[in-house]
Amino acid sequence: MKIYDISMEISLKMPVYKGKKDKRPVFRTVSTLKTGTSYETRLDISLHTGTHMDSPLHMIEGGENIESISLEQVITRCRVIDLTDVEEKITKIDLETKEICENDFILLKTKNSTENILEGNFIYLDKTGAEYLRNKKIKGVGIDSLGIERDQPAHETHLTLFEAGIVILEGLKLDQVDEGEYFLFAAPLKIKGVEAAPVRAVLISDLHDL
Image (cartoon, rainbow, N blue to C red; front, side):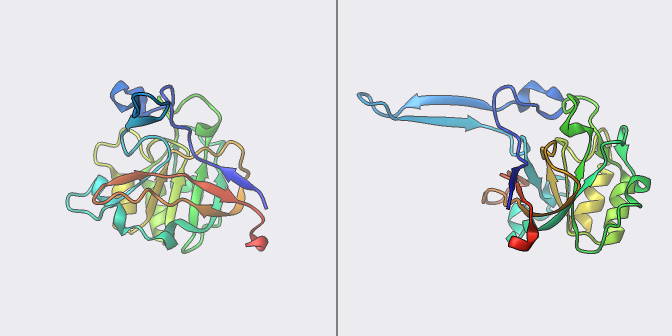
């Protein structure tokens, strides 16, 4: 059995969405004992930082929050699909040859995992790709970008997936992972009433051992 950590490291210099300064995490360490060496670190962070999960509330007024996502949806078998040859965006055409089946949890591996493009023109899933996954009735999709879409004013990708009850996992790190089947553990932090939550995501290979 081999475990792959597919989570981004949270740090001051980590990539953030479009490189925006206000999206960078802020750390503050304070001493809690006047005479000792005990410390506490406070972290000011967007819930969409690094590896995280979105819920419908992120894009839909009154939509379900992160509590609506069950552990059974995100602790599950999954498939990593290699799309590192894709330029700009993932479309229906790119997915049609990948033998995607109903109830799959799909992780999309792109150039985002290996090239320095996360804060710029990263590879994303377009509307046609989202519609294809919806029609295939998958249960979840993850991607190695900080947003599953980019510069789509109407948020078609998010909305297409949310309205079909498909889990969205963003900010994965898949450079060390080959295309294939794995077991995914991607439980979001248990934060009440919010639209997203950080995730420590891992993949486990050798499924026959589970």
